[in-house]
Length: 105
Image (cartoon, rainbow, N blue to C red; front, top):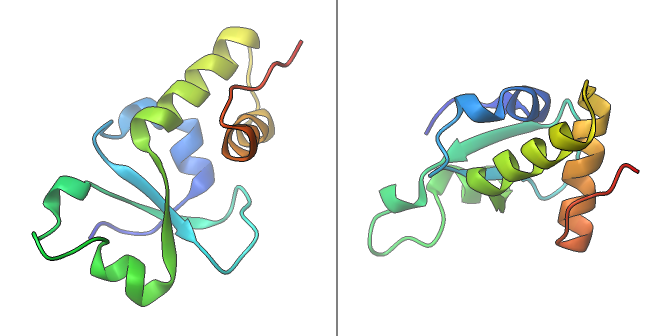
């Protein structure tokens, strides 16, 4: 298991992370830029595991693949020359709720 990082860091540096990883966030809190998350490659699970042990023990849930997060960030940056962290979070939140990319125009 990797270290916990803020969602802000994931969104601001999406291309620095492995596209094969999956994003996990707490199931018991409202997500924000400062929410703690962790990335995990689901291919690293044992055959008898559905979720990483850390996710189960910490009440974290699978949210999206890192490839999806990278696509969300890329889409937002194509629409806005200078994407703020708040705009990236809005794009992320919109995608989670609507299974679609946000339109900033």
